[in-house]
Image 1 (tube, rainbow, N blue to C red):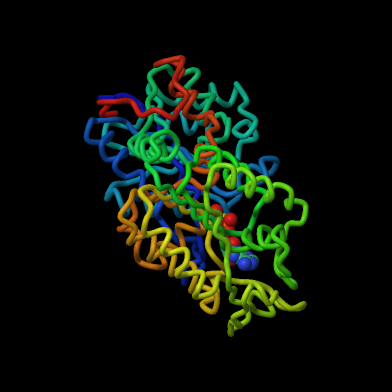
Image 2 (tube, protein in one colour):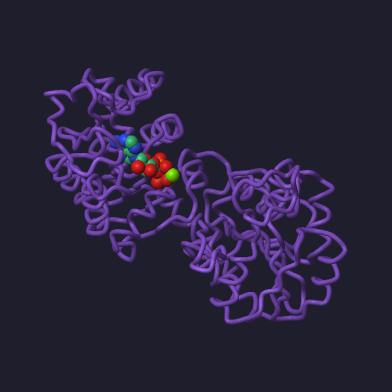
Length: 410
Ligand code: ADP
Ligand code: MG
């Protein structure tokens, strides 16, 4: 990379909020921090850095949108790197080409939001060529975006043969591979969160890899649908009735393998998501009409924690309740503690799950905190990530992304 233009696809899709002066600022820079080792290493090796990322969901028909500009992210990155970060006001174009070609070794350019260009999500060959013209080497460090076959993820590495995974990408693949194909038993999957439909595929795929003694512990809104499938009354709780059959499939597959499916035995309920008092209800009594299950109860916390304590490998995705409201955060915080204290190898993935883990102050005690939500779930489900396949194609056509490259120092 010495004195060459290195395009690094990063995942700087971070939450923003308005600062005291009304200016947009980065609310949580975890994803920026996570890619610093790659950027520092490239700078140390005298690369001319060109960074690109998407941010939010701008309307590509509109193009530039001030509210989703990379500008606040560039400012935060400049602070973290203690370097000037040059910010063109577009993704590609004559101005960008000139700026990139004027960039010297050790200097950094951050392109505008990739999604200002309609060609990004469509993986348009012309847009991929325009990006490829900006570099000699391509590095993908955007694990969290690598489940999408977009131009900056798959189009560019098809053109630029000098390509490699970044250090964050490598770390993610290594960590998640320990759950996909080097699973140590007993394995515990702790799942929760809001949407059963998004996560059922992962649960079914996981169940198929489990053996007697493993366990799946289910909390959050996800548990409601599973409890309903077991015949419990859930009152006005959030449930996905069209998923009841899929829940039964999970029960059947788990039973056939002697895998325990743990569901809440007590629930903290409220009249609305913003209620400030939690009422404890035993699942056998049923949740009355007008009340909703918003967190797991204390007995369930102990039940889940006891199982977690015995895990050799653990994966956690999805909060146990509406943890954003302190009245319903207890279950999620108790699980953060249990996962942190688990002596086995632990992986936590998912935007809200990681936010909850950070809130608990226990992230340091977890084996791996994944920066990818959807990408980590698809990987665990056993699906190929297009971005990983695109990188591996020139190296080893049989590579499917679930095997770390031994002795590769990137
Ligand atoms: P992740 O981002 O970690 O993948 P999800 O997005 O699936 O997690 O779920 C997180 C959301 O689920 C949180 O906003 C939380 O408030 C909500 N949630 C958890 N339990 C419940 C519940 N019992 N009822 C309603 N919402 C819930
Ligand atoms: Mg989420």
